[in-house]
Length: 238
Image (tube, rainbow, N blue to C red; front, side, top):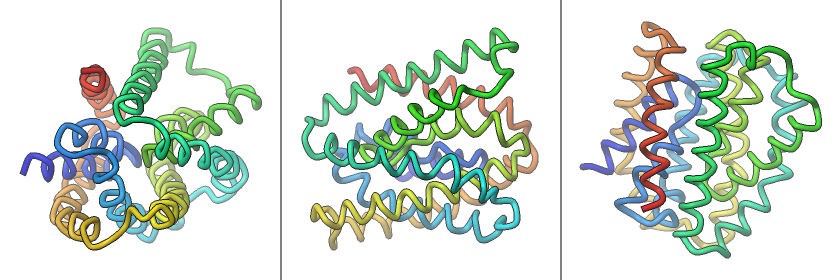
């Protein structure tokens, strides 16, 4: 039941903002199950959520930005993440992920304290490097979200377009991630049973997240999520 609650929270966050489901599931869910059991079950269900959002908001997907700037470099980074997921101990992966979250939070806090830091596009070289790292993180953890979010939020101001474009990105990337799981023999009857058990949480998260997306100030919600992720990041170092 606790794991189902974590999964529902993750789906609620992603439905509301367009990112965050796997961050929540991996960070909090790793206290209940190893990552190698959570991710092969969770990522296919998360793809269903991404598909639902993309189908419903297909006219808001910014294809030029998605295919020209986001996707190519994140795909190039995926193999590095696959290697790390297979080769490194889970404790090491958890701490790397925790350090990554703390770095992300530091950037966001800096931008909140200094609004002028938000202005101006990223240099192209920095954007490419960040997206390569984001792809590697996505290959290892199923979530390069924070990196893609950081790059995208300067280009996509409208929240519906932001959510739809990121959902399309996750759908495409996770197709490759799931193929990698299948190649390594991580998909089977057990992972399918876990995926099926997450479907009620998907339905609940979709309903709650859609209500939040429509009615709650998105900037305020992102700040609340930032605070939650800070607690989660610290817990990964235990």
